[in-house]
Image (cartoon, helix red, strand yellow):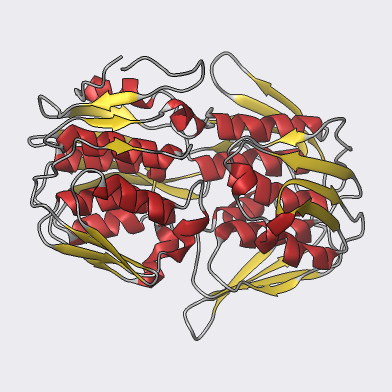
Amino acid sequence: MTQATSSSSRPLRVSRAGSPLSGTLSVPGDKSISHRALMFSALAEGKTHITGLLEGEDVLRTADAMRALGAQIVREENGNWHVTGQGLGALTEPADVLDMGNSGTAARLLSGVLASHGIMSVMTGDASLRRRPMKRVTDPLAGTGAVFLAREGGRLPLAIQGNASPAPLDYRLPVASAQVKSAVLLAGLNAEGETRVEEPVPTRDHTENMLRHFGATVQVEQTPEGGRVIRLQGRPKLTARDVVVPGDPSSAAFVVVAALLVPGSDVVIAGVGLNPLRTGLFTTLREMGARLDITNERIEGGEPVGDLHVRASSLQGVDVPADRAPSMIDEYPILAVAAGYATGVSRFRGVEELRVKESDRLASTVALLEQNGVHTKVDGDDLIVFGTAGAIPGGGLVETHMDHRLAMSASVLGLVAQQPVEIDDTAFIDTSFPGYFGLLNQLGAGFAA
């Protein structure tokens, strides 16, 4: 690893892997489920035990926020967590600003919780999060009667005056977004009557699953157009329930693609969450010719789980339909790396949501590939990648813009590029995948320490 340019940044030079990746590992707990486990258990009555919680920076910020709002949260030495909640509507006003770090999920979901409690709060985040738009959440949440004050464009810092008697919402999402859907449902928890959300395309349903797990009544109907309508009965009694967090499929994605691309690799990833609304990447990779098998399938904590057996494969270009985007929205940068290594042309349709992630992920993904000799084209809301048939030139500098997924994608590209790849900063990978480099080195990746 090159010397850091400041006390916080961690640049990295990645060279081509010298040997196949081999072995069995587990990836950290699912980030989406970890956020929700902390929030929902803080709103429930009694003590919830959480096993497998992701201890990345994003989730730890959520734990800090829920403590500041009155929940008792304790981590045991064995890595298990205990959360004692006071019940729905019983959050207390925080004494200080809630700093959500880099986590858009935490900020947006917590906005729904705060809007429906009669307390005053202020949320902020790091430089990356303060650039991300919040109006897509605050606009519908204003219908509860809560008041929001934000910077231009609805950006953080965000002051929220919640409403102790919020009105239920009836909202149709203009674009598919699990975060907006979840924020509206969370606001509806403390509202009298029924909250209704219609989504044009099904998005990850961890919120609906966990609401049921804690005792809420949630009904889901399919629409004739292929979307869904979710109905939540307000003011349920949420009761503490133990939660087992499965391995995060979005984190597993980087290991999967590395194993597919590094010649001769044979890797097993144990205990990965296989929620069908999160596995679009695995479906797509199989369409490209990936040798990716799922074994030991089971249900844990209401979520499907299984082991992934991945072997190096010759991949072909793929045309990914727009309606698959919600089930793999976080995985497009690493899929783009796979497409750059594949033979033929790949087209990812309807990826406009990438523009409002931790960075403009569409522009950043294009830059990642182009800087390393992979030709791309943006056609409206579609990304086209021209595969190199296993001959990515490399040799470029990747600017990560504080985006953890972009940094990990660049590291995988470096393992198969012909020339070393420079990454400007990898420090923030720990927000979602603590120990990433060490874990891949156990398989033989050879990242410099």
